[in-house]
Length: 91
Length: 391
Image (cartoon, each protein chain N blue to C red):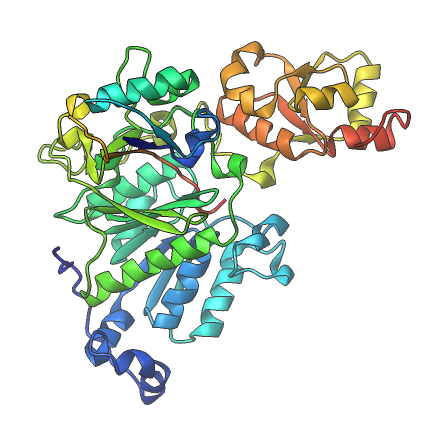
């Protein structure tokens, strides 16, 4: 399945805008992602292993917080999107 | 998807002149006389007359929104012209509010402009918002975004949200009764320095144009009560791929400000909430602390204790260097612990651009004694040490 990397995080993922992983759940997919790109870990997770509150993860077009969070099952052909908060506007 | 019915403006009438002006609106059933009079009676508050605010204000004025409030305390800077199209070269140095008000009235003299030349704060936001029907958020920092969101929820005004970064944007409509608010999407801001700001990353000039007009579109749809507004929907724009995606947003029943049992019932200290130390406002280019190469030389010769931070790449350090401590800009967030915030730090790069970004980042992270070396090592080679190669 595909994980889409948003612009602010691409510098920590070898500048890729998407990464392919094999996984059964959202949690497994994100682990796969951070094991290939360990620098992403601290941007996605707090020190005690929880997903950061200013980063949202969507399975296709649904927020995983309203599905099964990291236990949400995924299948081939699914797309995981990481959506961090960005603030640019005036400047 | 439900449309807004909470707007209930006083009826307005259109003169013959206005009817001719808006004829292209009037001949469409989706607008018509009804819609145009709604636009005239509507009061929209634009927060910021910059990147997003420029196209927003221009198009809302053209569309005949009767009252446009504009909040901006900044001055037009030369580097704004790449994207802030309401301002021209002749406006550099003028307050953005003056420049914006002038262009709005030039497009449409029927628009009443209400200027607010002030920073939006917890002390004034509620009062400012009360007189308007819709608030459009085009700000550039996290504390203000949370402030705008909370003030919109507390005053019951829809918040047309737009944000940009490099070549990506987000658009949605928050703070409606049925829909989510910004905190439902992002309950917490990122700690300062962890997510790069627009000033650090740069932005494609056309991007605020694209996103700002999407915001204007949503504001107009809310006023007209037509179409499907982006309530509960987040549109992600990727300008490089010209891809538009949509994600579902849900109202969080436990949201501290718009949920069933709100714990936030008044505005808070947003700088504190976002972890920004002191009373420093978010750094803008116009407040960049700088030092010239001549002054640096003078102070070093006088024995001052200055820590030189070089934010270039290793291969550049090999060409020429000032003996500085090398942390490439991209590595700065994860190596910031190598720096001592009690020391006076002079950051430099080749010409002053990257180091300006480093200074911005360090100030957001709470460093107060950091300066940018104007002109970078190239200026040093030019003016202080001609034996040093320029590249």
